[in-house]
Image (cartoon, rainbow, N blue to C red; front, side, top):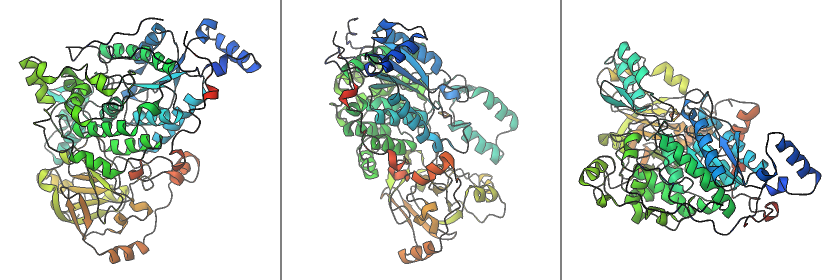
Length: 612
Ligand code: FES
């Protein structure tokens, strides 16, 4: 066996991240694949014979078997680079004495999947969990990129609880147009809004379309995909530094190769996701989420991943951690820069280094070392050259001089959202964070699309746009429609933001004063269903309140008249979804999937000792 990589500090923030940070193999684990191949019975005989059909021999079958769970798809441009990433992972696995076997799982791309990608996150998580558990794997490398693929794989891997690490596909290169950086999809929305307002012409829109997406990879702002990759790194499921490497950068392949080597060691050590993704690790990830001004969707996804391990993350805890975590990363859509610049100044490890005093440093990570040991290898900002510090501070603020004393997200409560709602207040208009306005209610997506640009719509800039029936059950699948368009007649008057409230989600690349994830949702009779056009709504983000100024008695009376929308599905997966999906505050997982893995620690299924 090759000696382990020697830990060494790196003075170059752009060196191959994570490659130098791995623990020497310690206590051996018992090998899971042995159950399939190592017995003197007919089942093992057949398993060996059929595996040899692919050209593998007995020497191969004696090695730790590492699955490469690939969400590559030609219908998912964000994950389109994952074939090359998988090849690099394979090289690493072979270098460390493992046998890499790649297998596909469902791939969910935000852009094409209809009616909405979130409808299928749990399906992908089930696919991942069951295929890991069902196959002779001693370890698995999860390859994800687009928004839902990352949390789905983390959820599945958590439930299967077989040694696992993640490599994401990386962000696209920055778009470029007339000397400015473009970000998907923050600029899609920004320019489309201007196009609707008549301030940008069709020729410009065509040029933007050609210049926005210059490479494979996921959206390159701190949208949901970037956020979930960052959270995977903060959770310890990824080698340090992997989240921000641009998709086409060769360092991503070298990072993948290093991951291939390390997963073999993790498999030998038997370090499982449940040992890495602990309650403390989730709190570290939540702090990182706040510090990077990450996506509101991460709240739903982190609650869901934690739920798979029997860990409860109440929304209040997100808010408590937001109150005590500074916003540091100056990244769009809340800030100015994009993932390419974040990588250039040190990526997620540099942000975590700033957060170090606030983190639980004892958490075990995929390096086999603790988070504290990993961060000890990251050079403090103060030791950089003056030019490097200056550049870094444009993208990552110092903890002592943050962009904001509080983190990027806030959790609201009130009679409109008894079980919580989320707002990304760092991407909102400051003057709207305390606002009272008249509700203008849209009952559904169809109602919204029919009415929003109607010249006769009775609406002013001070009104509050309310969208009902777009939650997990309502739409169904909780689509990213919470960033309701500003009515055209107000756009033409120069209005670019209004308070908007719904039980939907929004893309992590969106911005504005937008209250999301209202729970319980209107389609199951939450108070949002009782709001009527003309009611006064009060938003007070500093006080974390969202209320409709209608008496409790009147809300109750109106809800007695509530009729739930007709179920969108009567059969198939859609029916399963409607029957079992939990509310946003509970992560939108299926009720029957929540809880610690039951059989993952079944030692009887882990055969031979690998200490040889
Ligand atoms: Fe996949 Fe934006 S469309 S991350």
